[in-house]
Image (tube, rainbow, N blue to C red; front, side, top):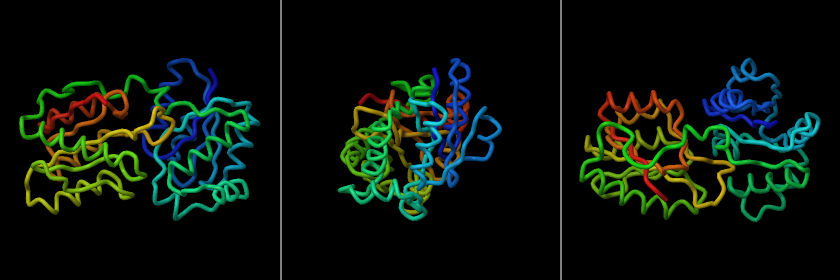
Length: 268
């Protein structure tokens, strides 16, 4: 199968590329200049660079390469979408028609334009199924009774927020919501929460948006999450099973075990 891979930041695009090769897929990468790591250029057999606002150039590249199936991999920071973007005429025209200029509205509009050009966006997880979180405890230590209560409360709060264009994570302490994720990202949210609770234990809960598809904005955790949790006093991580990517999954679980952090996957 031939795919186009639109690469954002982090290790997600590199892992998707490695996984695609193992599955025998032919991949052409279109990397976002403001986000993607330069190493993607050496890892990819074919790599093109576009700026965030160059929708027309993206379409030209995909059509020139004969690509009709595309996957988005890697984050594009919300703040950059709305502060750094310099739209070309194609994107400017789209922005003028959007009723709501949040991330869902913007990317949903891009998806429609790609479809009109015969280019179809596929689920972000299609190349990384083995890295999806599974249901149940993934670490040696399971959440204790107090942490389980925080997870249950955090799920209710996070799911209530999932319909809005904000982050996908909440931090809970003793069944109180200490912090909600916005544009700053999970790590900054954890540090902000730690400053508010005077050393008490925190629980981090992450959910997927309430959509049927997983075309973009898939929840992601990774090895780097563990030291930030340790620094901020977070003892438990709960994620939505089957809908959250765990980058460097085995290494992450090993690091969590060493830090006595519990990782739990829960059903929708």
